[in-house]
Length: 386
Image 1 (cartoon, rainbow, N blue to C red):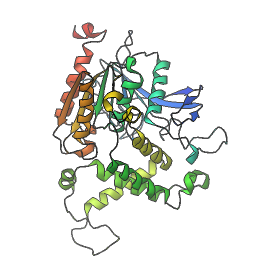
Image 2 (cartoon, rainbow, N blue to C red):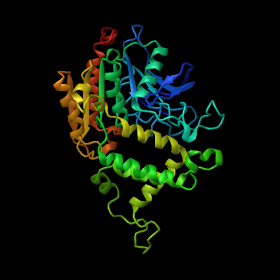
Image 3 (tube, helix red, strand yellow):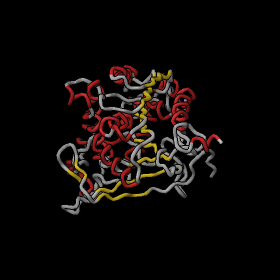
Image 4 (cartoon, rainbow, N blue to C red):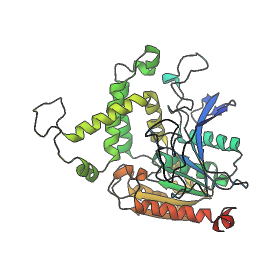
């Protein structure tokens, strides 16, 4: 299979942390396995590393493809690779699966060292700040002191923002895309409805479903359907489905499928329930809820971001009603009030929140220029120009 401009075949790696990872809840994890992938080549000066932070249901597999696995392109493959906006001819790109997830790093499906049984509901609550600490441990192991850039969309953007205040001397640039400094009450409400769908599934067994040989697929399906609605704009759904009937005529049923949009949502829910872990969904949506760097600073985002030394790019999308442009402008204002260097792009795109995953030429153009300027500051820039 040909993957033009792709990083090609990639193989995940695993780093084991034997030293405990302290969590902001007061708990700790040990040992911790961190699964990650890298793309490109690290310069001898180790100054061209870019950390990609993943969102809710993504993983360490951001680019390229896995051997003998069809349709296995990484979730941000349109952005990362030779000749792409995040050009792996210039940058060494790292993406790590966060603890608590279900794609290889230590999470609820792994054995609890104290019992030998799957962690399940006993897995400790993790926060955005904990993921950033784990990512810093990975960089330490790779011998990378400073990042050329950190980038993320949605929940990944929250991690990028957290990096700039937790490790300000280790980040030169930060891209915060389709994100927010904290969830709105409406967003927390959506997360809670999705969580209730999972925990009220009879197969949930208070989070210890693996011990009972069950999976709360019904709850996961509904949770995914709720989430998917919020990721798309009304215009995108109208353009894709409209009021098209599945069978071309009304079946006069209250429980069956009448409209194509219903069929699509059920398909997405079914697919999600086959590969995602329910406890992971609970953990990650709660991490979204908890993120609020201004809380420890009397509600002042300006004071929360005062420690940041990075140069910022903030990107929003006009039809993103879950993480609206207004929320991105809050970040921009706080940074400007601190006299931080920040560029802001508000992209008129029809896709809703999912736009940060799309190959929109204006959006990619912004990122291409931003990363191009960073590339010119690297130790190998003169050789690349030659």
